Amino acid sequence: MIIAVDGPAASGKGTIARALAQHYGLPHLDTGLLYRAVAANVARLELDGAIEADAVAACDFDEALLDDPILRSDAIGSLASVVSAHPLVRAALFHRQKRFAYQPGGAVLDGRDIGTVIAPDADAKLFIRATPNIRAKRRHAELRAHGSTISLDKVLADIRARDLRDSTRSNAPLVPANDAALLDTSFLSIEASVQRAIAIVEARLQA
Ligand SMILES: Nc1ncnc2c1ncn2[C@@H]1O[C@H](COP(=O)(O)OP(=O)(O)OP(=O)(O)O)[C@@H](O)[C@H]1O
Ligand SMILES: Nc1ccn([C@@H]2O[C@H](COP(=O)(O)O)[C@@H](O)[C@H]2O)c(=O)n1
Image (cartoon, rainbow, N blue to C red; front, side, top):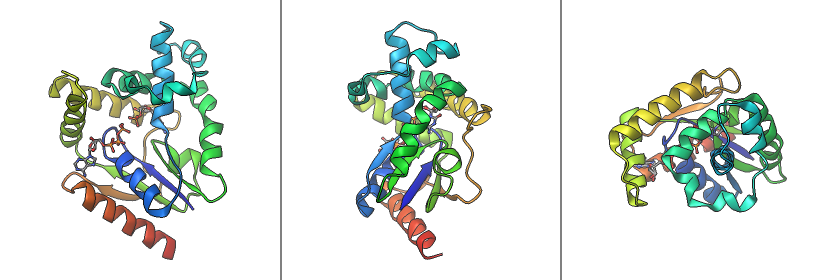
């Protein structure tokens, strides 16, 4: 079974995807981490992420980078959204994601284009939403808990900029797949969001 979980920054898709993976005993891939690793590599090599050739040169990153806490920073999230707009960067990461999705037994993937591009025939597709203000508050609390001193206003501005960039790029934009179930977590607890997500998957499996 393949479960695709998409949605904008800090909507809760990763939290839900991890819980679904645990519930169904499936492996999980946070595809945003791959783009964040490219961004961190761009920064490390002092390249310009807005230049496609520079971003492509950073796609060959060390696997250990995926565990580096630097990937969780707000700045790397924003740079990831810049490098991810380049078609050749998306092409460089495409097969890895596809292989993960179509491995024997299935998988859960979360990102921006899982239901539309990576696994268009996924058994269940969820598109997770929450208001920008609520997403910013959640992400701000998370960053602060990890020692960041970033302001809530800056987090909100970055989330709005990222939403715009991710949803208006020409290649694999952030849009719900036609057959995705929409789940707004704005006024749901994590527990309630996960229960709704499981109910959606169950309904899809029985359809
Ligand atoms: N329903 C919820 N209620 C309160 N907090 C939540 C809820 N869902 C997620 N969170 C918290 O919000 C933050 C962002 O959630 P999460 O990392 O799952 O979002 P995401 O969409 O995967 O973000 P990213 O943009 O990094 O991919 C985390 O700190 C998480 O614990
Ligand atoms: N399937 C994906 C996943 C992510 N991106 C881009 O990466 C940025 C960081 O992603 P997070 O999920 O870790 O926030 C995101 O803003 C997207 O630009 C993507 O394009 N496709």
